[in-house]
Length: 393
Image (tube, rainbow, N blue to C red; front, side, top):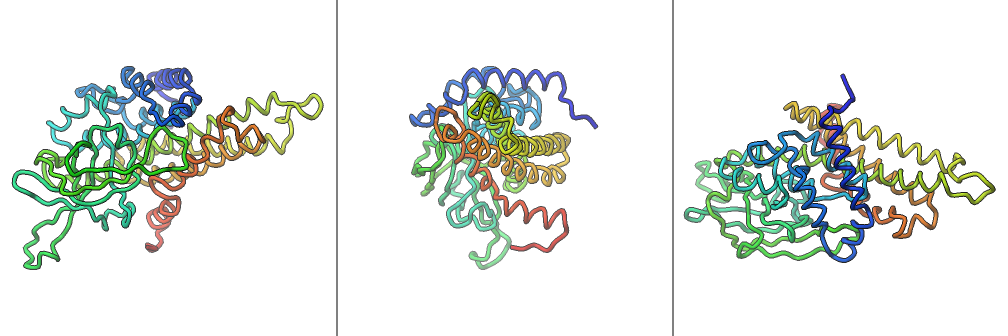
């Protein structure tokens, strides 16, 4: 057992850290508050190969795994630039395409995902069903040589920046039943151009400082060609859907851990130099230093679970990675929220200012305890699959 990164992974961490710090949190906040996107950072990260570290080399990627992508997510967040679309496009979309797309789909999309010139976002959540794909209302039906999609999606990140959205729908499968209403519905994924006729969007106003926007999507008779169906057949739908879940949880956790590191570093620098009671720094008082130390311990514990989950996933041990990935996401969500809240508290009034750059993360880390899967659903998962308890829902 080793906790050391390989020399190549160490070099990646150092290089991404340097890139992130060159832009910094002030760049991130300025873009978010002006309604712009982090286009320059994304483009440079793509040109340097960081967006495609987990994409196979034959499609222009780095040939690494989720371990390497988690490093990219964590280090950019630790520099104050937590990029949500790293989770959506390279982690979910690229993984799904790599593992379950057709060769033509891989050739068409993966090189652009690797160099950052293309973004694909992901649409599963719905207003009524949430993330319960058993109750999804978005349906696809065959129409001649193509498909027609109808439904609604919500909290879909970055649609305004992407060329395609990977839509999770349900397709009626002929099971021989005479009753059409009783036919079985199975999940399928479709690569839908964001400018497709019948696809409209409505921006959701969120109390989160982020350059990436959230949307409601409406699919009204959206017609796509046959090759928009991800994979060789409908049988690819369910495994493709689950293929993106572990990378999503691991990279979200890495982003949370990086955000926690950033907040603790900002607060520690401040408390080590701030002096208001004689000649001693406020960080010398245990009432200040102990909460920061406690938060640092929680972040480091989360990082260890992230490393375990990514290692298991890259080794092809999907079931074990599912458990560890959920635990990592839970731990990192809690640790990031604790770290940012603690940083705000020890900075006092300065903690609530934009200048000191910690309160700007409060909304994001609170959302990290909800999305992409809530802490309560993770606890349900652990209770059922680790502790052997009956399903509670």
